[in-house]
Length: 280
Ligand SMILES: C[S@@+](CC[C@H](N)C(=O)[O-])C[C@H]1O[C@@H](n2cnc3c(N)ncnc32)[C@H](O)[C@@H]1O
Image 1 (tube, helix red, strand yellow):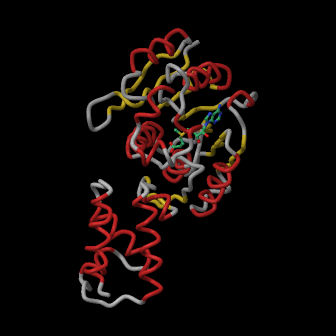
Image 2 (cartoon, rainbow, N blue to C red):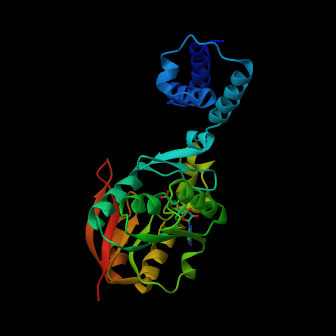
């Protein structure tokens, strides 16, 4: 069978399952099987494929047809122009989160700071910031030991083990240390809305990474309360929030002595990140 035939038949299969990126996904998965770039694949459409490669490819297409996210099938996701290992114990890093990283890097460029990343998942936020702020150090914590395992692997992959440490810990268990910057992309979806998420997300991504409790604000509130006691005065809290949480979260920040300094909007003009400083 030739590449073109395989792509067309897989693409039809995925289209039948209402996967809108059916062609692209088929090309990406075949690139993985053949260990070629998509571009190499597309210029060799008549190349014949060996039976064992066809059967491996079909198994990947089957997984995708069940709506498993491409990132879990590939075991990696690009974030801040680097590849991060992911698996079904970690949230798949999102482009909105890159906007928060971009802002932080701009604010702290060439500074030497100590950072805490609460709910670190793959470690993508902390490791991306440290890759830019070469004199800084940081700690990432997560309640999931399996996520911490992945964050440690990513830290090694990116040669950042000397400046980053990851611990399985709930945010309630952080006591000492005064941080210059606390970053967090906590779970913030309302419990009742989880059932309405796309199948790719609700059936595959870890609930503990999504579920923000009844009002979506459970972990956000904990992060804010905790940050009051472990952040340096004038230290910064960078918090990613859900689409319609800006007003409520701003109010909680204000009543906890945080002053909003910067807002980051997503591509649809929703405020998705609040950067605030702890006042005296
Ligand atoms: C939305 S995910 C963010 C992952 C990663 N920071 C990112 O942006 O891709 C939230 C993470 O918070 C972790 N988490 C949930 N509750 C927590 C808690 N009480 N203390 C520490 N981590 C928690 C989850 O395990 C999950 O990895």
